Length: 443
Image (cartoon, rainbow, N blue to C red; front, side, top):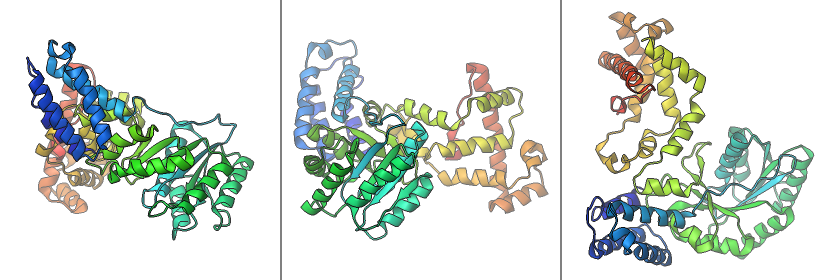
């Protein structure tokens, strides 16, 4: 996520970070490198100029030049201005109370990911706000668009209204009535996109908006289109007065031009980002957290939030007692591996840890190895999982055959298990809380 700009900015800070004394010359040199980094990231040039101007104004003041730690002070200024560019603060969805229907209209070009985003957004709102959601299929032009929305709805566990599958405005209007008649409290309307902006498309989505009067009009943009996304958003905004933006494929974007340009050019907040193809692959956009990740400072808050969603506090306390009494089993180990997998790709998890992003090139991440570790344990009987000492001789051969691995890999798993068990016991003894697994065992 935004690897390109992170590396460029990190390299730029080498001129100044950690310096006990900084001068106007090395500040200007660093700012010149930052400017190049932003332009390479496909950030709009007017946004870049404004950013450099405001950072320069503060960085050349006495506050930095006479600071005890001027390098750190300079990085803090850059961080603050990045947060400003990205939107200053998190923008929540405008949802009415549950006894009143909230309507969300999605608009954007074809290929931006509107249909899958509709399902992801439904899943997120359902999970976070416990609402009854209906999807409305108003893309009657793209082949199989309605069938795709139905599939996405099934995965998200929400109903889909299709109407006559012919008239988008009529479908939208009827879906509002259906939602109200059937006690839905949230309606998400998936509209048709085109390969480029044209008046026919814009007029149609404008008519839908006038008919249903949505509480939110969210522009869905492919973040990999860079600053072009801001230009397209501006055009949509002139017809619809959009209330916010969803950037898809954010996990694949190494540059960040769309994120940096869109808020500044159209004055509308980025509300969500798409982070994977999975139904839960959407996140609320937090400007401060993204700025922190861009500068390689990590995002511990988001990591903790992810962990809290997955880890049950009561189960964690039971696990702690087991570790203290040396009763931690291979079955417990399997559960921990599965929970770690649910957090998402290991690379994304590591990037949330402060200082890790700059060192990712030195770490060999092998997700397949974790899967093999799980397969080995799953090939064991429950009796073996509860008592690892039983796993000798013919049992090892049977387990290796069942998991499709060598006996050596079974031996390595047992060594890693015992090593992790001791590490966690030491962590509890020294810090009073459970430490993380040694990730190097799985890479």
